[in-house]
Length: 295
Image 1 (cartoon, rainbow, N blue to C red):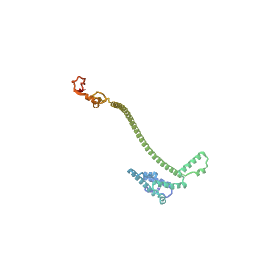
Image 2 (cartoon, helix red, strand yellow):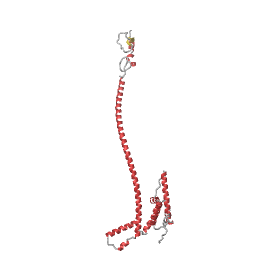
Image 3 (cartoon, helix red, strand yellow):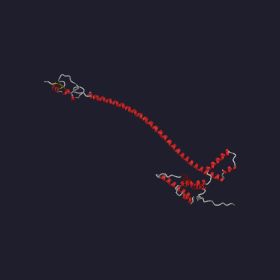
Image 4 (tube, rainbow, N blue to C red):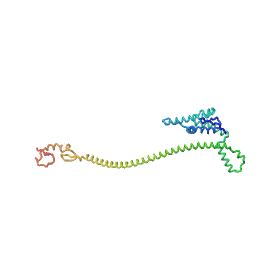
């Protein structure tokens, strides 16, 4: 019976010594996702600290900082001393991962390992040549041919890139859907507010019409009052309202009657009882009348 050797420990992260970065990165990715998917989100997307004004924002910053420290711990435990020195200045997991990709991902491509884009472009070129030139020598085909393992590695790399892009687009779509729902709600709120404002405008227009009618009525009343005032002022100026009870003339009172104030008239006239002299008198007047004074 065949015996199988023991594999690596599940609790230990894979060690990277500066070679076979693509293989190590794939294994490390699955190892981190097995620990916690939020750790891989922090490595892939990073985080930005929000201003610490509210308790909710402080708690969010604390949780993100804890996830970042856990991810950094896993990454640094999976690097040897030489590699860890190169990324020792990095403080965030995303920055560390991107720096490893720049340092060792490009070196593998330069060493001769076919990248996914180069492999696809070469396959497209080979396919076009095969269609346009059916009679090609076997030597040219062998020179541009790749092994099954190389094709499998390129396919795996392409599939991982596709999954990463797909996850990013899904997150973007979910965010856009949330924003779309929020915009629809705000649109409905604005429409309701617009209807309320329209009703208020109609009510204000009707009240404005009533006020205009009342204003016109008040103007008419004011005009009539001004006319009455002018008439009263004219009458008072002409002294039509005053009448003397002594001489029965308009324009003065008994106190300012000129006939009563004449001295000659006072001298020549005296008060006598009614009926004593045969003179026309006012029956409704006073009990005495003025008559000429006898000498």
